[in-house]
Length: 251
Image (cartoon, rainbow, N blue to C red; front, side, top):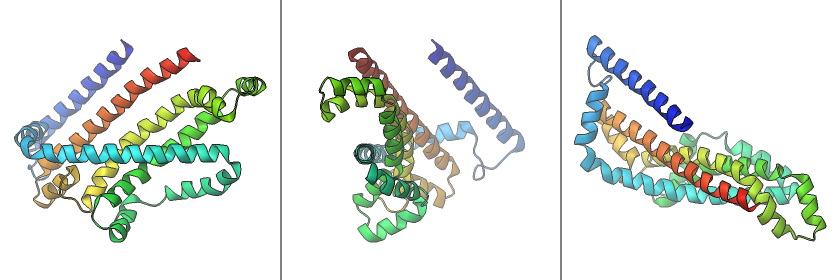
């Protein structure tokens, strides 16, 4: 009930913002090429939907593949840093530095090195996704109850058994927090990669719209990106509730 109340309040607030936007645009007679009204954006969205759907599907496919790769790499790196303190001290500062390189600057280099195929796009998405997974997973593993860990060691549990039965269940909430952050970044990473060279995708659709001064189509693309991010976030949140509650019952 509380979730629905929060969702309803957010919906009403957004509706009020759109109404205010519509009133200001019509009252000030702002031209379409400068700032279209929400009603014009919705109309254009429905009219361009048949041509827009292939671009949406291409971005969804690229986002999901890149997110899976980035999350897997982040999870593996987090386990390695957790198990090997020496490697942690050497590699972790480099991981932090890697996040200070602007993606929009790195992307053209990846295109030069790897061409215009799928690989550079997946690298871009993986780069923006893996770091939240690494940080969140490491924090979750560190939060394991020391008393329970010591108890399992006293019972003769191996490191693998301790990880699967104790450390991983404790880390799941943190892992999903990082995964939700990475999910929102993955859509952005996919669009950025499409700007630099692709045949289909929301980024391509947006580029064409900007070059032809179709600002209404640009806003259609922006709102679609927001909806995709929210949908992916909601799916991961639903998965989190299912798995974390199940693990809690087992433990």
